Length: 264
Image 1 (cartoon, rainbow, N blue to C red):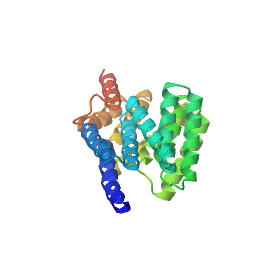
Image 2: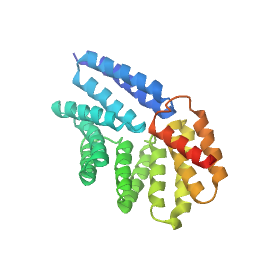
Image 3: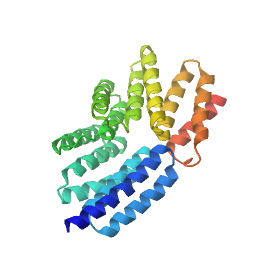
Image 4: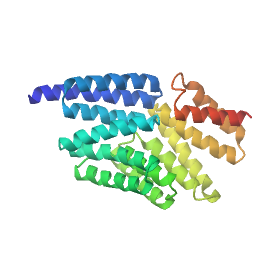
């Protein structure tokens, strides 16, 4: 009955959310194990909503650690379950990740439109939590050179984060904003640096080491390009040295490669 469903969902969401939190705190291997456990539990329930929630949280985790294949698999499953069962909010959330994968691996313009439609569905469902979906859209604009569009989305997303208190992606939003500013040319380097430093400050306040790593890599590249190699090396070595796992992930591989360049 309804009480049993409520009981299962109260167990499912915290299990799945724990994996995402572990990933953002900087423990991707532990996060992957928690993710597997959360998915297994949800599938045992045979309740579509429980399974869809777990699949969606798994997609978020794998977006953070840059496993595009798993993002595709998990988000497509979550979207199918949401559509089959009329779960509008979950449909919008999952569709944004499907669009992100499409933009990266297929048709960029189609992917961007899919994310934009997904955000409309999220609004239609009355959901207020959407900063990660905004980050997906900003990244796609950045990757494909739509700088003005990306900056507009970033501005709106940062304002949304401030007004609602939904700040778990605020560091990444600031980092992406900085990357967009950099693409506007050398005259915007100071503003980009400020955005990167804000991203690092936000991440540190949240103990979100994963976002801190990503923002530090962005800032270290800028410092290197502007003749501040020693500063870049010191800050990147500090955050990279904190990690004890996840060295096969793209973000930590990128950080290591940059450290090698800085030490060269």
